[in-house]
Image (tube, rainbow, N blue to C red; front, side, top):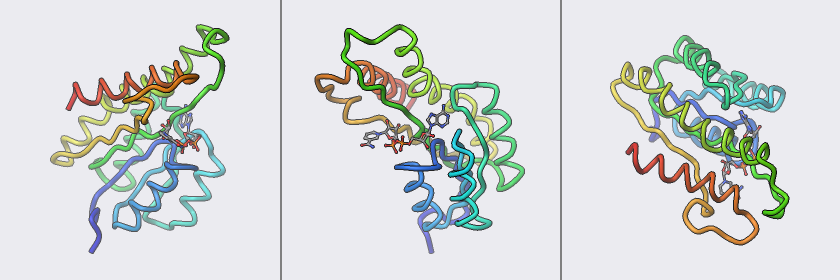
Length: 167
Ligand SMILES: NC(=O)c1ccc[n+]([C@@H]2O[C@H](COP(=O)([O-])OP(=O)(O)OC[C@H]3O[C@@H](n4cnc5c(N)ncnc54)[C@H](O)[C@@H]3O)[C@@H](O)[C@H]2O)c1
């Protein structure tokens, strides 16, 4: 028996890296998982490898309206969502003085607004499921900033703050 038997999970940024590890662990624990990512080939290939307990859906997490379609696909494939893992994220490494406003906007769109959209959009599906869990991936940098990573750190502090406040 797995810890996540009969659970339906949606994992963003699940095509590679830590997100792909989350996907594999969730499947190992009995969940059915939708992998949502902009990396179509990698995401589809992971879903194919895992079989009928996983599916890939293309999602740019910064696009609020696109979430509706992905949640609808998840429900029609596996049922209402019990668990959302907001994992997709980026880091732009530059000296602080070299950051442009566009860089900062991009980092906040992918790291913060994506999680804001996901948390809002997933609630009706979780209510249908009878409850659920939202896991927002922040970072050490969202708790203790280090020199040289100011904008990433600021975006992850925003994630930590939103998560604590909504919880
Ligand atoms: N790797 C680390 O050491 C570390 C430490 C602390 C926190 N984190 C956080 O963990 C998460 C995963 O990190 P990782 O190291 O696996 O990164 P990664 O770059 O290997 O994977 C990130 C994934 O997010 C996806 N992604 C990026 N932009 C997207 C978008 N607009 N829409 C949908 N998907 C998008 C990418 O395609 C990729 O699959 C991130 O939120 C990161 O900030 C990572």
